[in-house]
Amino acid sequence: MKRNAFISGNDAVAEGVRLSRPHVIAAYPITPQTVAVERLSEMVEDGSLQSEFLHVESEHSALSACIGASAVGARTFTATSSQGLLYMAECLHYASGGRFPIVMMNANRSLALPWSIYGDHRDSLSQLDSGWIQVYVEDAQESLDMVIQSFALAENLDVLTPVMLNLDGFTLTHTYELVELPLQEEVDAFLPPFETPYKMDLDNPKNLAFSSQPSDNTEFKYQQHHAILHAKQVIRNIDSRFAQTFGRSYGGLVDAYRCEDAELIVISLGSTTGTCRVVADELRKEGWRVGVLKIRFMRPFPEEEIVKITRHARAIGVIDRDISFGFEGTVFTNVNSALSRGNTHIPTHNFIAGLGGRDISKESIRELFSTLKKISKTNDTEQNIVEFLNLNVATND
Image (cartoon, rainbow, N blue to C red; front, side, top):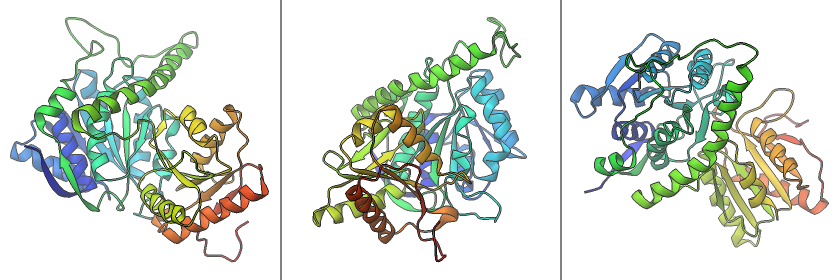
């Protein structure tokens, strides 16, 4: 019989990992991720999770241990945050280049300096080019469900790419919500034991993690690129199959809300999306035609979906909890690239918000939609307009 539990996002991740039956968990604590690996260590200790739990000396070692375990065909999990993710940066490329299907939770947190333990997306977005699939979740239920889906995705033999599951630090990791816990037998049927022919095997030797020459390196990178592109359809298939088994669908690569006839659309990642939906509902009652588009996967990037969903909009706003200093937000860059490739000429505006954990309020979202409305009336197609929301200075140049 299914049961509900009132748990945090960190707890939900731990429950998703338990249900996925990993062979090896390598962990090093860092706020606000620590609770997730603490729960997993407790599960291993009390016997509710049969897994090897490695408490290593650093984040670099945590991912290194997962790479080694994955190389012999083990299902592996680790977790990190912020500076810890950056400490892993070298290993991120080893994991993706080696096609090791590791699943890692990242509790999104700002980067130093100034030192901050609070959340934004600067850590994960700085690693978009590391070759990992990146998914951003909105609430605790999606966090649990996406752990299970992430293993199914990473281990698909046409993908074999590590997955980074991103949760907004504190806003999601430490907020308690009612979550439905799937039955173990349902998860076992959905996610069978990991099997791969690409592993260290004395009876069937393979050459793993080798060097290459200029004459063949490009071909390896092409295969890696093609696998992530192929992951788009695999993501859609997994979401559909998950909905059939568990009754919950997340839309695949994106989730569109009231966008069918929307003139003004805001694009967001993660937990901010909920606030955007609330404001959209309020503005709809006032006669505004507004919608919200949540990007779930930053890699592979859903360019086709973005172009299709926004094609009738008169203005698009992108909320970035990130800034590429001296230019614009990373999500904005990717969205504009997709729109240009789709040959659309809709004016876009970049809203930098929530850096270092600053609150993104309903009032801020209303201000955002008001700005988009002004842009739509003037039909201003100028690109790369960057605005910091709630900036505590007199001007916003």
